[in-house]
Length: 107
Image (cartoon, rainbow, N blue to C red; front, side, top):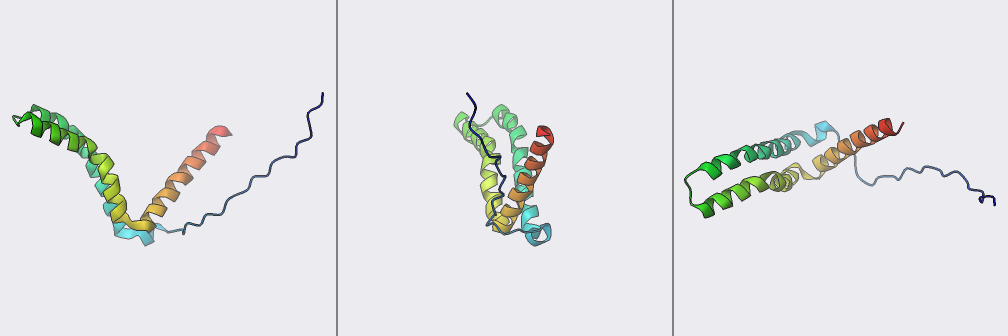
């Protein structure tokens, strides 16, 4: 039994409705947002210091939980500081790198 004839599929690029921003347009807000994210990851090594301290156990638990959640919470603060142009710039840059790597691996 022969398989039905199939037309080759065309790849269609979907036009993005997002405006394109450059690094010059996002400026200092992007730098501050990136710094907030990087500094927040420095909170994790402080967790053992808090646990080893002579604080009340409930305070230790609260502080270590807050320090553990810092990287997650910092992303919300960073996006608020960066604003929409920097968010779109970051998103486009990350997606472009992922696409290039995906194409390189699949080739």
